[in-house]
Amino acid sequence: MNDILSGFKRVDLCHQPTALEEMPRLTKALGGPNLWIKRDDCTGLATGGNKTRKLEFLMAAALDAGADMVVTQGAVQSNHVRQTAAAACKLGLDCYALLERRVPDKGADYEQTGNILFDHMFNTQIEFRGPGLDMNAEALAVTDRLRGEGRNPYFIPGGGSNEIGALGYVSTAQELLQQCAALDLAPKLVVLATGSAGTHAGLVAGFHAMGCDIPILGISVRQPEAVQIENVYKLAVKTAAQLTDKPLSRDKVIVDDGYVGAGYGIPTETMIAATNMLARSEGILLDPVYSGKGMAGLIGQIKTGQITCEGDVIFLHTGGAVSLFAYEDQFSTLHAAN
Ligand SMILES: *Cc1c(COP(=O)(O)O)cnc(C)c1O
Image (cartoon, rainbow, N blue to C red; front, side, top):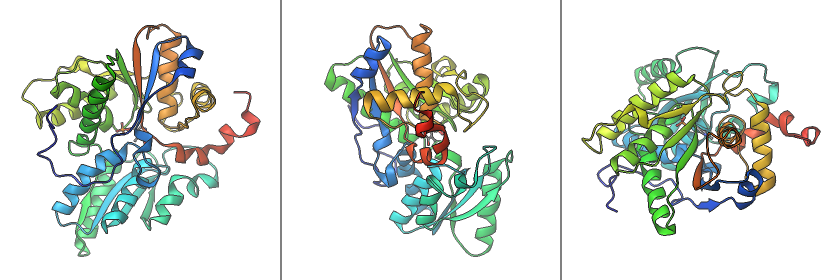
C-alpha cells in the first residue's frame, strides 16, 4: 500500500503501529460477533490516547510556523490537553490551556487528579472558564493576547480536531487496513466514541481515500445525532480533500447518540457496566467520558440486534483511563456489584 500521508509534515510522537487484538472472553460473554480492539490507548505519549496521532501533524505545523508555544482548550479532565502538554514538553515548546468547567456537580478532587495532575507536571499554564462558552473562540482570543505580549503562539483547536489533526486518523485507517490484510480479516464494522469529531472524520476520510467500504459507527459522547453527523461530515470532507478528488457521501457518517446519557462527562449505568465488563473480561481499562460510553454503545447495539452476531467487529480504543481517577466514586469497591 503506498503511503497517502507521505507528503505531509509530521513529527514522531506515537508508538505505532498500535496492536490489533482479539477479545475472546468479551465475545463469548456477548455471544458474538468476533470482537477485536485497536489499541490506540497505547500510543505511548504520557499514558497515550488518540490525540497523540493528531499531534504528530499539529505539532509539525506549529514548529513549521516557528511557534514557541501552543495554545489549546478542553474540559477540565481533557485527555487532549494532557497529551498536547506532553508533546509540547518533548518538543521544547510551552503549553497554555483553557479548561472549561463543563461537567456539573464534581467534587474538589476533579480539579486536582487524573489528567489535570499531569497537566501541572508538564508545567502547563492553565486558565479556567465557566461552562457553555465558545471555547475555541476563547482560546483564539488568548492566542491573540499572547501574541500581543511578544510570544509566537500556535493555536490548536479543542480535541486537535481540524483537517490537520484528523490526518492522524487517516494514519490509523491505513494501519488498520494493513493489519486486517495481514490477518486476512474482513471486518463488517468499526466502532468508536466520537466527540470533537476529528478521530471519526479522519477514519472516514482515510477509508474513503483508500476505497475501503467498511462502515464506521460513531457513538456520540456529547452531541445529538444530527449535529454530530454534520460536524464529522464537514471535517471528513475537508480532510479527504487533501487526499483525493473523489466526493465523499454523507451516508458514510453514522452516529448513534443513544449512549450520551444526561450529558458530556456525566456517568451512565451502561458506561459503568461496559467499563467494568472490559476490565473483568479482558483486563482492559476504558474511561468514563469517551471509550466507556463507546463500548456501552457497541454492547448495547449487540444486545438490541442492531449489530448481528456474525462476522468481525473492531472497537477503536481511544484511551482516557487517566480520568478514572476523577470518577473514583463511580468505580470504588462500593460499586463492585455493577
Ligand atoms: C478526545 C477523545 C475521544 C474523541 O475523539 P474526538 O476526535 O474528539 O472525536 C475519544 N476518546 C478519548 C479517550 C478521547 O480523549
